[in-house]
Image (cartoon, rainbow, N blue to C red):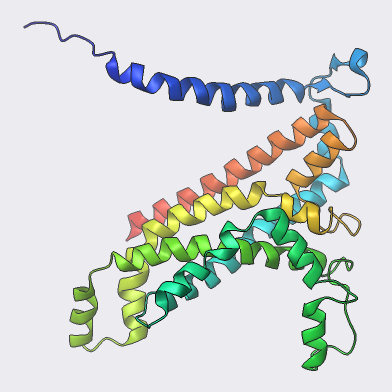
Length: 294
């Protein structure tokens, strides 16, 4: 039996992508990992030295680190829950037939395509404690007696920024869920209606189960994106007041570009990656176990 020749052509085709991924992703990760074991202060280039796990020990004893961890978990869970709820509702509405549906589908993309900095500046203006439109509407309709400093109050600052990111990101859920809805055969709904199933039953028994693969992918992507987002927080509050809107990406950025401590910033970045890996792995395991049980 003649020996089968190894076809190198597929490997040649994929080699540029592997090289680019190595150059852009793998090498920076290795550099960051190495930096996390060093005393790496930009303003003291001659004092750079290997310090082992000292940065990690410092992080575990750092109260701001634990504040940032807590805010990061709340940030991920809160933003994604709000985006999923609003995106699902919008997708159900836009999946119906009405004469201006095409226009509505185009308009729903506006938050998603708006640059993050512009989104943050717009929401910061709307939240303004002196002349913001949100305060103006709430006072006019009697929900507030006086203007409220949403971004300057440590009780409301994080939630306020979460609402801004929710507004920016919910169209992604809408688009993905709407695509899934349009892939569901109408014959399934017709058969269920013949059997006497109501709207709620059809939604629970047909729509949701068939959308689970799309929801899985969409939520997974949003977990990664939301966990790493810091631009909206940075522009709207800068992490304040105090540490009330600090998340791990923002804390890492502050340590790197304000304190110029790249060693500690690298440590925070790797701890964020570890936290994200745990969250994603737990989510994937939960979804897979649910699918197996079904």
